[in-house]
Image 1: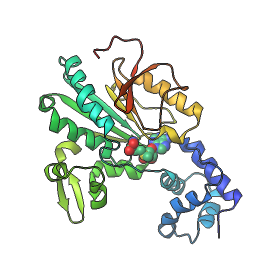
Image 2 (image 1 turned 60 degrees about the horizontal axis):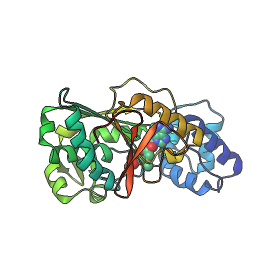
Image 3 (image 1 turned 90 degrees about the horizontal axis):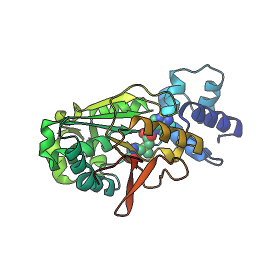
Image 4 (image 1 turned 90 degrees about the vertical axis):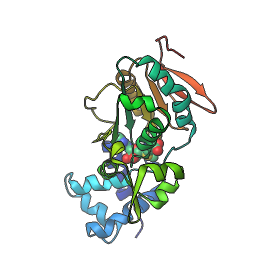
Length: 278
Ligand SMILES: C[S@@+](CC[C@H](N)C(=O)[O-])C[C@H]1O[C@@H](n2cnc3c(N)ncnc32)[C@H](O)[C@@H]1O
């Protein structure tokens, strides 16, 4: 049985209300594909049966699991490469210069998915900037999905996942094999503070980030939500901090508070109005 309009509209309203993710018309197939893997575990024989049962109940852990399953968690190590080159060649050398006294570096991977972005960053710092071994470096990794937050905490990846973007030398140096999986060294795991966080709701307090990764998540939201999130990012980011967005994302038309810093074929962003070292 396919997904009818009542079930589909119920699902996309639920998703938009709780996560701000917009599901366009005609994406019934996407909903079916995302929810089918849940059916057996949750004791349902079809997606319509699952949704019908949810519709008559108030919000429950099942609703939360369904919302988790509706998120797109696509990510990989050193995704898009150029942002990590910008980090290595420009951003971190500048940070070392400007934060030499406090020796603190706070990074926030907002919408971290399963953690490859956070761990790629830590590997890059470790392998290129030995002076940071004497700094207090921490990464806050947050995501809407509990399943993803749990994965970041564990730091284990399948062979397929480590094959995506992770140089073989980094795999050999920083991961230990456990059966069919690879686990990141505890040194890195202990530097990551993993938390559940919904970007569309009130944000908790956390240390002021020097660098924010907000990559490949704004694309799922409407214009108002994107603008609201960028305004809040601007308030949280250090005035001389750095913001990385995804390759298809921009602040243009959403916020005037950031200056675009071109780097190779891409760019990163900095709060306007401060004399930066660069
Ligand atoms: C495509 S992944 C991007 C992962 C990583 N930033 C990257 O660029 O590779 C998008 C992530 O955003 C998360 N997400 C979606 N809506 C969210 C929300 N309202 N608040 C926090 N995270 C959200 C999803 O759970 C998913 O893990």
